[in-house]
Length: 254
Image 1 (tube, rainbow, N blue to C red):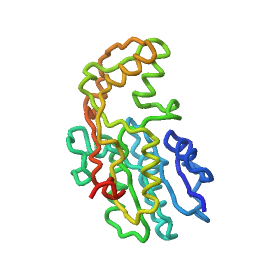
Image 2 (tube, rainbow, N blue to C red; image 1 turned 135 degrees about the vertical axis):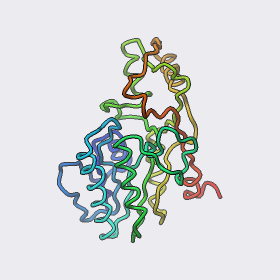
Image 3 (spheres, rainbow, N blue to C red; image 1 turned 45 degrees about the vertical axis):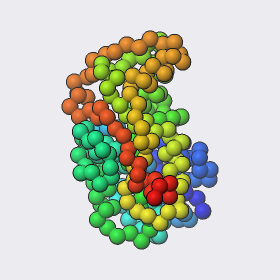
């Protein structure tokens, strides 16, 4: 039976549809998802902009719709995987372990955390797996308002200049290829576990390192620019997924 993928026109959704032929797509505004004949659900649909300040929209699209879908899947005995975000860890975290106290840094992160808490406080008859994505990059990303530096810098390189924030040598992130994200989703299909799991690489790379790599491949110049004031307050300068729990679930470590 097919898999239902919500948010299938988004960056990760398009890649997921490509990797899982025969899947059924659904988008916000299409009405309630039709779960008839569905074998499992991968819920990616959400407002994905970390800059969104419209709490009413975030509440409706990220929280209420997610709660309804998770509940409907449970009632029908359909396993569901839900996209969450490393943004719930907050700007000052240094360990990024699933048991850390969350510090959502913006309304978007708060919406993801509320769904996590809802799942945590209920007993489910089916696996309900939430994946905290770190900095995902890959194909189909070019349309995003906030693309990863891998895509943004290549877009800028076409004009000859890659713009990085001042101090980017010290801004390090766990950049994870979308192919790795999809592989983890697929490997969790047969696992009878619920809960929150990190999805990253466990390694970090600086924004400047990414810029230098793109510059060396394209011949573009690198230019440092000031960080906008509105980003400074809650900027995550460092992320690194602790992958121990995820790897244990996959049987990769004892």
